[in-house]
Image 1 (cartoon, rainbow, N blue to C red):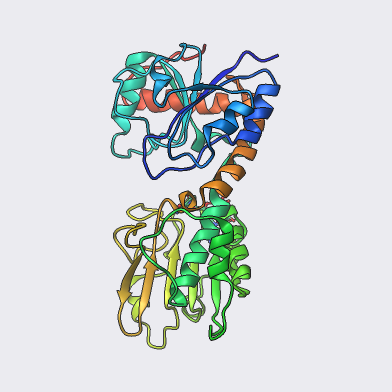
Image 2: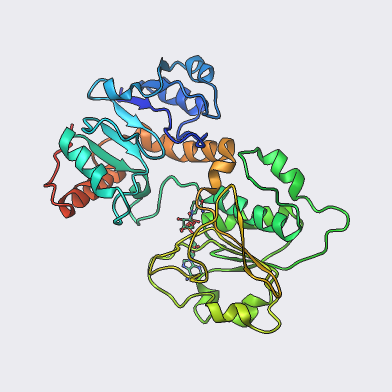
Length: 352
Ligand SMILES: NC(=O)c1ccc[n+]([C@@H]2O[C@H](COP(=O)([O-])OP(=O)(O)OC[C@H]3O[C@@H](n4cnc5c(N)ncnc54)[C@H](O)[C@@H]3O)[C@@H](O)[C@H]2O)c1
């Protein structure tokens, strides 16, 4: 019987309706002997009553700061700015190991309090593959928004919705003309999601992955109406599109959705724009004649909070049932210690 005490926190970001553990999986954790405290949260897509019915303890939003010291605090996105000293072990996406803004501050808060970060981005199997990720629904939404834009049916601002509602708008309607779609990174999680959304929209896209981009045929790329980029770039490769490609005479490409959103990174395969788009203004026009529209939203899965949460939670559950300081969690801890050293903060023990 495990003695793990998990504390599912309220998300500080008001637009974040997702959760890393859904009530059905909470019930599995409780059944396995995990003590699970769930904070009340006005925007979480699952009501607190469902967690209570699953056997979880209920606590006020933000009360993790005074949780027992051995509790492991679970969330998705950033912590609030206070307290200055983080004494607990935390599981969430810290975005703190690649020199992101605020990275040093977060690591210093852990160093000051003696806590530790198990960063979900670094929860990987023996071969380095992510164990819990939101990719499928990112790709699904990316392709769905691109198709809606292409058909003149995308309405801003975007807001969280359900798959049923989204699919209703995505289904081909009378008067919709046929188009050609392209998914790059088609074999990955996001790529599969994009292919599924294209199918719902009645389209059968061209699918490229590593083999098809090794000797990149940009002319062929530009002969598609709608393109979705869903690659996970780990080493620099020649860009899929450069500024001058957008001015190629006869370009057929009209709608480009960059799910990857590596803008500003040396690994960026689409250096044709400088900034992401967002829910308020999802589309930016890159060229007028003929038109070329860009969608580059970096929080796509939050638009389908229920499906994204269920998918993510299903992947995270077996890992939580096996929580410890070896295996994937041990690798997370090693990465945290390495980042702390890189910031001159010494090597945290964090081995409770
Ligand atoms: N915009 C968002 O909201 C959002 C959300 C989640 C993930 N993402 C991003 O989406 C990207 C994909 O994530 P994933 O979970 O699908 O990754 P994944 O590892 O499951 O799949 C990536 C795919 O890209 C392919 N690939 C890599 N380099 C390529 C190249 N040069 N040419 C063609 N194919 C190539 C891989 O072979 C793999 O099939 C990541 O960059 C991730 O950060 C974005």
